[in-house]
Length: 213
Image 1 (tube, one colour):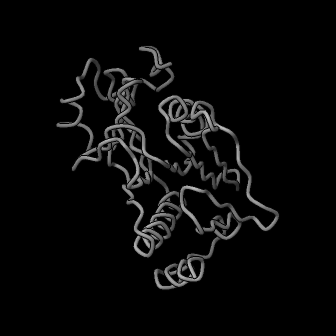
Image 2 (tube, rainbow, N blue to C red):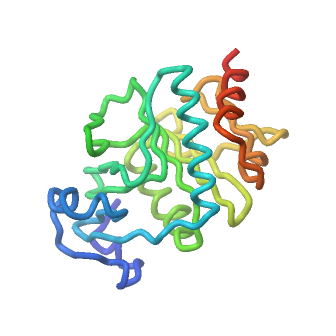
């Protein structure tokens, strides 16, 4: 699915280096918010306030959930997810790796697809998050992909079908709640997530406790 031309839509100024091996990328570029695409190192743009707020809130929610129900762990960018079959490495804003994941989670990168990847959309990442990464995560076998898009005021949820080949779009219910079988009992309320109010850590922990009662 990936081709050597896949990076050509990236602005020339965002290409940090070409013809770079995986080992050199990990040694010299991975920690600097760069992704690796068929030997090309692509710089990611700085995040904005909305992106930072949403990413932190989701990370706190998932950390609280996994502390109370220890079935996996999370990693945040710039932690690398290597997709060797596509000759790419991405740095999802958040990735959830369950204990049942058969791939190897190393000290510095996830060697294979995570169970769940979350990307929070910024103005410069609209095409990448809704297009390129959607196709790549599907082809690589990422179990679920959540796109949290404050620009459009929506979240999109994609889950692999029973054959583990094709993403099927999922929807929140009439109350705006989304649940995934990957994380039993966890409830994500989309209107609340995208609202301006930012709950503190204790409030998030208490809400997760109520979910798991």
